[in-house]
Length: 169
Image (cartoon, rainbow, N blue to C red; front, side, top):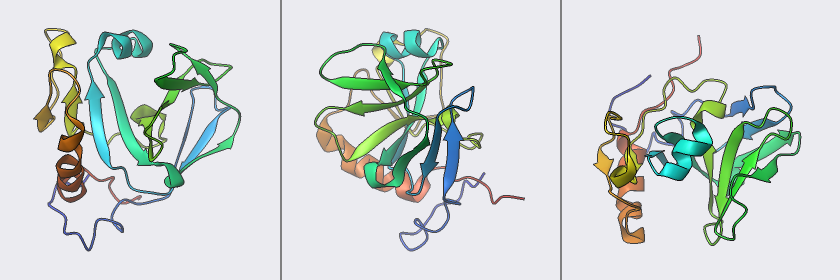
């Protein structure tokens, strides 16, 4: 994993793309061809319940760089109008989320990547609902969701400072 600061010139080339990933049973497979916009930990109680953990860890992937290459994920979790949570129909792994009105990216559960050991949250949200012992090394922390106006600066900072996967051996 790389921790150095990155210049705008090298941000597109140092992500070791494409990435592959999939659910636990392997019936749904993914291909990622664009660098993430942001790595986030969400501490909301909904993510705690759906991930059976203290928080969900996700990467905001630009939609053109996200592809389901095999299998057909189904909507699970809450079936509301705002967020659509996609799961493997067989093993029920929560794989990714698409949010209404935010078609430019997909929130991929980072652990769906075949190689995800490098993912470190750059921002954390809903810390007002976090478990008292849950901590992350995120550089940006928000009690709820940040204002939309905060995202461009965070995305720019993540492009320069965010963790990268190490070169494949």
